[in-house]
Length: 394
Image 1: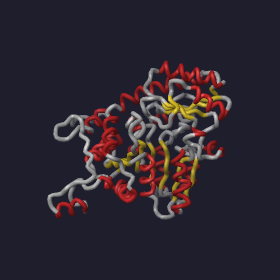
Image 2: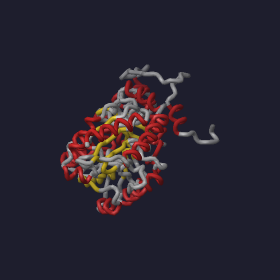
Image 3: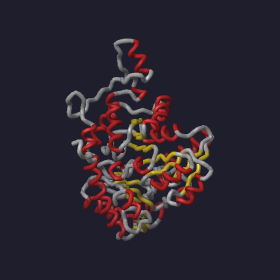
Image 4: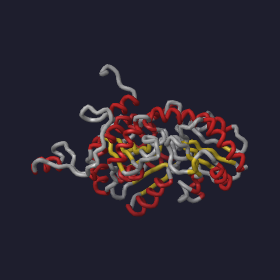
């Protein structure tokens, strides 16, 4: 097959094949490796010879196989697996932020990412943190004009569904002497590969779409070997590495990513169209709909598909949003996204509860916004449940 490149599904399935002739990769739980001689132990420890050492060093065959499979999907030289998506974000950003460095980030990010930047990296690390409207490229350029070390964005924002113009952001970061780090969790590598658009590092909450079965906590980092090296050192020193069991489950989940995502995208697009015509729904800020301000960018950068996280705003504000969530009968009231089971949440009181009303407004999260993490159920069942929950809350 050397005469043509493999498709993404084929690549990741075959990247996850087992060793020594096994079709399914094995699970190796050992935290340590043994050596025949002190000399070889020293060579492996010094990086002069390949080999497995100790799991906290990212050194376990099962973890390495999962990291390599994710890197294959993202088209990256190097993949690292972490204990969670937040561990991946922390390590990737800290590794590329010098002392008293400058971080410019979107103001429409996942709530804990905003907390990490605002409450920890800023005051505790003496870092300059500027949060900007990532859609306003002039504002981003002004924020980076004095120099920037890291420009940070989500390909598709959680939950507001704003879409970042990654090629433009990469140009701005590069011109200011910085690196673009992108959270590609919602888009997944099947819709977008940010490294090919100029990003330096890509991070994922692998808990979500990459695994897809609500049974793994893990993160992933993809980059060139040079960009990954300092991140690996941060992980070694902070201990935020993945365990073999999670890595094995993640590898299994990756094999069905394309099948799951295709169903989730079909469901999300159909539900978005129906919600837009539903009485009691004030707005459906889903970038896959033609009226969304980022719809053209979705066509240009994401192949016309806007992911399977579907926000919609109901009339009546916060109380109505919470009532819709309470009214769901089939859709689970649960956090997280990307799994086969659909979940519903009220961001202002859950995932983004740490934001003030002013910050919620800047992030595009009004009180009546409801987040639907679209799963793989039959779309008619999901539509019926949403319809009765919205009617009951009116």
